[in-house]
Structure formats: structure tokens, C-alpha cells
Image (cartoon, rainbow over all chains, first blue to last red; front, side):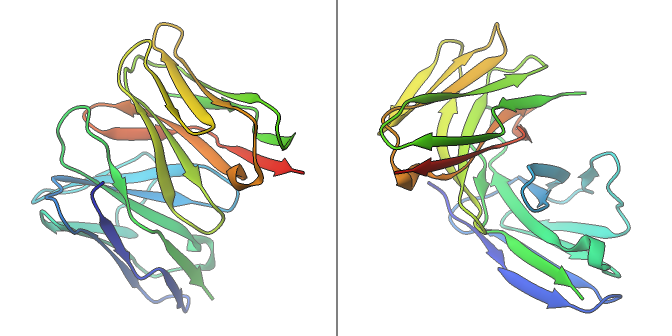
Length: 116
Length: 110
């Protein structure tokens, strides 16, 4: 299957700082990328959908000013957690898709964010 | 609001036994995915089910989809310890947006 690379895999940051997470599709062009958040022992919650060259679509309850998403190219989307707080500590996972109907989305390795 | 519910949420089973995990969803969809997640890791794709009546098998796992009943099952045959993980179903909506189920944490013991 296709490869999606997420970086970093683990990050610790101080409260009030910002942290950027990258999601790259390595061997295909991803017209659509998704960002998920997962708290311990819980399911994945879709945060936002990003399409190359346009603004991201955020799910209800997700603060767009706090979670900045940029999908600047067909192989790269970034999630920036701004002014991070301890409650933002979570496992963030991206997935990438070609956007064609009935195709599978491929998942990155995930990023464990800890805000101290 | 779309709901995707899995049953059971937690399953402890003995090696060699069989069991079925159920995934019910509340909206029309003909795309259903099953994933495995090990602790601290991302998702591993297990099955992609794209039509009513689809059945797929890989090793000791078999998945099926009934779009009319809005139900998918993941059947485990003769469980082994290596199958211990959390299993998620996910329903496809729109082009490729996924809504995940609640997850089933499976523990297989000797």
C-alpha cells in the first residue's frame, strides 16, 4: 500500500508554545488529507479535512484558530497546535487519500504530543 | 449525527476460541473498513468492504458487510495471543471521510 510519513513521532513542548506536525504522502499525490485526534483508550476523532490549495474544513467543536492546517502541496499537510496547553496532549494521526471514490485512506505513524 | 458503535468494547478470550465483534452504524454507507491498532501505534488496515454482502478473510480474521442492516462483523477464529490489540471499524461517508467506531479492545490469554 501507499506510504504516509508523519513527523515527528513524539514531541514534548511547553505550555504556550506552538508545535507543527507534518504529514507527507511519499509515493502518491494526496488531494485530501485528514487529521485525527485520539485520547488514551478512546477512538479516533476526526478534527479536520484538508484539500490541497484550499482552506481546511473543521469538524464541529474543533477550534480552527488553535489547530491550524495547511495543505500547501499534493504531498504535504501540516497541523500546527498553537498556544498549546496540557489538555492538548494527545495522539494525532493523519491520513491521506487520492480523493477518488472507494479508495482507501492511508495512515501516518501518529504523533504523540505532550504539553508540559 | 452519524454513530458508529462496536460491541463489545472489551473482549477477553482464551486462545483457541472463536468470537465475533459487531459494528453497527446509523447512516447509509457502502464502505466499511476494519483496522487494528497496537498500543502506542497508528492504524494497520485489515479489510476494506465496498459492497453489500462483501466477505473478506485473512488468516484467522474474517469480515463481512450487510449494508441493509448497517452492520459489519469481524469474526475471530481460533484466537492466538498475537491477535491482542484494539480493533476499529470505520464507516466511509462522502468521498473518503471516515467515521470511526468506538473500538474493541481484544485480549487473548493462554
